[in-house]
Length: 357
Ligand SMILES: Cc1cc2nc3c(=O)[nH]c(=O)nc-3n(C[C@H](O)[C@H](O)[C@H](O)COP(=O)(O)OP(=O)(O)OC[C@H]3O[C@@H](n4cnc5c(N)ncnc54)[C@H](O)[C@@H]3O)c2cc1C
Ligand code: FES
Image (cartoon, rainbow, N blue to C red; front, side, top):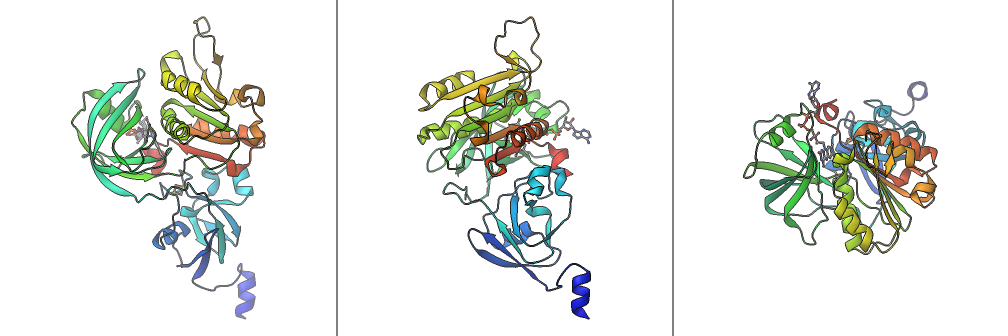
């Protein structure tokens, strides 16, 4: 009788079920009604995550064997192709059977302890009319991997906001950090930051966090960023230069108009020192037709082709960062260009509403 019910209702009722993480081989039992991510973290697995509510995509991993039940439909965050290739969100997965899940294996996989620091804003300057560089000093050193971010908590505000480290990490850790913050109309944190001089203001920082970092490979690198999405790509590329990474790079940077472009000197410096080909291509979507701009016009997605990049896009590893709409559109283009999903990495700058969903 038991067996009959088992087959009628989708398999064995064996509890608790077991998860195995590849390639480490870590195996643990997952209690009923507890997510794969929660259990993995309790078990000490170095599992990337951020929002824990199924919106950021950081806990994306591949289901190699077994079955999970999605608490929230994965298609809200993952593309059709990601889902069809077996990707799941661990924070939204309850086990329906024993499972085997594949996480990335890379010598550079970030493994920094997440800690809480006290910080002070020590300097600010405007990069553009709405992007500010904020330099902060922490009470002690933090170590992070280029491309990662930290959560900032301001007193009097309900929840934290995330900001990506905007420069290459220093070996052995550092207490001085800088961030690029774009002023978001109607945004609580950014309104606070931009309304007056905030030097000397104190805050809490929790981190580092995030799965956006340069994977070890010798393939071309395709960077795509918009607005303050510049920050983590700049950090990744400056760090890669310091580490003598010798791969062709094409970096498509989307902005509305010339007044939104920034870090051009830094990009030029990278271009000069980079040991391989390095193309930084700004693309403007709303630059007046009659202006003196002679560069590219349109959307970054219009330029994802071999002719612009100078290498076969399909062979590249893509790193995307910025507003969610830009990333989703770029993902579609990259999938059409047959870039392997395992080779597409992104950090969506979701706002507090999107992260709360
Ligand atoms: C991993 C990650 C890294 C990030 N890195 C960076 C970075 O390096 N630089 C950067 O500039 N940003 C970054 N962001 C975005 C950043 O965390 C904040 O979301 C951003 O600064 C806006 O914060 P805010 O408090 O000003 O806006 P919020 O208060 O969060 O509001 C955002 C928007 O929502 C609207 N809104 C808020 N509440 C409501 C409501 N109830 N109904 C309707 N509309 C509403 C506001 O008007 C505003 O337009 C990152 C985000 C993530 C997830
Ligand atoms: S941690 Fe799972 S989607 Fe954000």
